[in-house]
Image 1 (cartoon, rainbow, N blue to C red):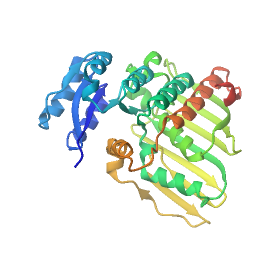
Image 2: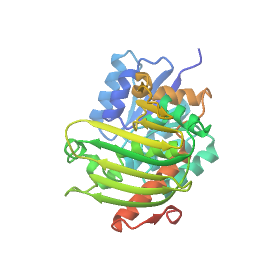
Image 3: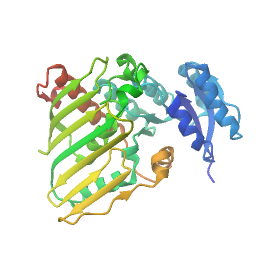
Image 4: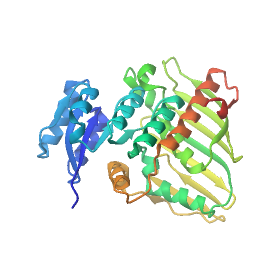
Length: 338
C-alpha cells in the first residue's frame, strides 16, 4: 500500500467535523495539522482525530503560519471556511506547492477564479472542488452519455432547489454578505448552478435574474432565465424559505431523452423515446465522503470531474446573476462580465 496522504485542514467548523468522523477511519489519510480562528472548533476536530487513535494534531489559529511551518510535512490541504475566504486561502495552498480539496463554491468572483486557474497552471498541483454533484457517479455518467450524443440535442433545462434556509441560518455567517459572498442562491443554490454548468457542456451567453432578500442582508429567493451559447435555454429557481428540509429537482430536455436528476447527483431518472426509466440512486459513500474522489483524482485513477475551469464558468454565471438582479432583471451578456 502506498504511503498515506499527509493532510491539513483549514477551517474546522461543522462541515469539517462532520466529514472527520468518516475520514479518521481512512488508512490512506494521515492528519497532520489544522488551522481555525476558533480554538473550540480546532479542539473539537482534534478530539475526533484523537478518539480514533490518531496522532495529535498540530493546531494553528492562522493558516499562513500553518503553511509556513508545516508545508514540508504535507501533501494536501482541505479548505472548509466561509466562502469569502476561499480565494486567499486556496492561492496560499497552491503557492505552497500542495494539492487542494476546496469546499464549494470555489470562489466568489470571476477575478478570483481566473487568479486560481493561473496559479494552478503554474504549479501543476491537483485542485478539486468539493461539489457533491460534480463528484457523483450519476452526474458524471450523464455528462458522458450526453457528450456521446445518446440523448440528442439539448433544448432546455429547468432547475429548482429549496430549503428552509432563511430561518435555519438566521444571524449566522451564511447570511453575512462580507463572509458568504451571497445568499441562498450562492450557498445551497451553488449545488444546482454548478451541476447545470457541468451537464449543459456550454458556456452561458445571456442571463436575466431577480432576487428578493425578504428583509435579510442577502438573497433568500432568486429566479433566473438564461441562454447558453449553444442556444439552449435554462431557468433556475431558488427558494430559501419554507418547511424544514432541503431538496432539488432538475430536468434536462433533449431531442431524444428527458433526464431528471437532483443537484447533488443523489438520484436520476432517464426517459428515452417516451419510456420512463427507473430511479437510480447513487451509492451513499460517494455522497457522504467526497474525499475518496479527491484521492482517486490525485492518484491519477480518474479524470478530475470538478475542475477550476468549471469553477470559472460557475463564477461567470454568478457574477452575471448579481449584475442582472442589481439592474432589476436587465439582461446581461456573460462576455461583458470577464
